[in-house]
Length: 284
Image 1 (cartoon, rainbow, N blue to C red):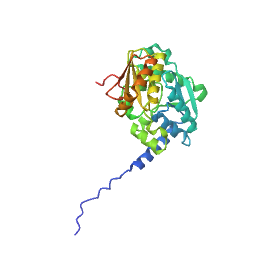
Image 2 (cartoon, rainbow, N blue to C red):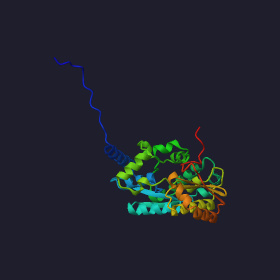
Image 3 (cartoon, rainbow, N blue to C red):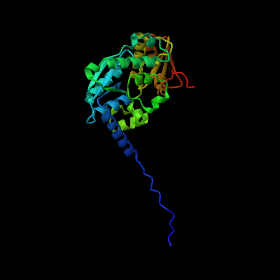
Image 4 (cartoon, rainbow, N blue to C red):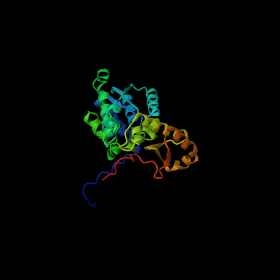
């Protein structure tokens, strides 16, 4: 006689990585439709690029991508924004921001990013007569919440939204979705603003930002895809991935010569390697 031990528990549903990606894309498209019309702060990085692409390619979404232009935006990044806008047929606008006119920004304390994002929100407000009332979207992901980024607070206070955070998407999710969609930005290295290379307490100037940009351009010309040149007065502290140490050494004469012509007296290679936010205060 068969023994009845009660109801049988349903089998666990196994979600494949592909199914998960497709589901996340569908969620993002639905979110954008619900919030349309929208404007996207488009820096050309992996996060904002995915947001801009999906918004532009989703039926029922009225989206415009906006690139904020200032001395802290590297020329290479601006050029890539223009190229992506052309490749993806984005509705693309540029707007100049005025953070360099703000003494609180230039003095470069721990809230520098707050003042920078405040300038972005002011610039966006100035476009409303041209683009209408739209929700500004930033490509902040859940991993970004774990770092010292006061700019996020300024953006939220200004009414911006973070779709990836609201949908619980991480940086890894952004990259995997981008790769699935065939976007060339899927593995693009992070490229924070040039001011992030300046230690807190050192005044941010146009001349200093230009020096950093020229130094990092030199490293790219040497075949180093990702680098940070931290500006410590007369000292340029180079951060690259450990795999690129040998490349820096092999090009040391060129690097030292060009860095000296830029205005640095000493050139140092940081043996700790590239670390995002290495100038941020330590976590308590």
